[in-house]
Image (cartoon, rainbow, N blue to C red):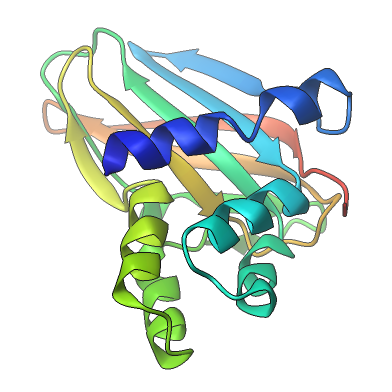
Length: 180
């Protein structure tokens, strides 16, 4: 299931990027960790969620905000790295720091909306894991809802631990895809 959701998510990107409709992906390498952030257009995200059993209006509640795809790779940081998405921060253009949405924030909303279990599972597997430990060569990937409007610009401050030591990096000037 995870592989199928990841493959479907990966297929959302190439056509929109080739057409120049989305900002180019941003990449950062820091202390053996690689991060790639890609802004996603609302229409493909909506279609992805509808394909998992979401009604259109419910899918648009999620896709109508700035959604990014995050790929985090432990290229060679040893020992393993551990992260918690809830500790990452988005610095908006007005300077205010906000936390990204995590799947645990969204799942109760979808349950309250009466979505079937299959839709909830599909959604959960498509989201960037909220916390994880990655050994050298391991990858985490998935969607993150920033909660920002389409077309916004933000800096992503991410942190993790490796060998008991805290690490921090900032990706500056990430552009959200425009409204589609």
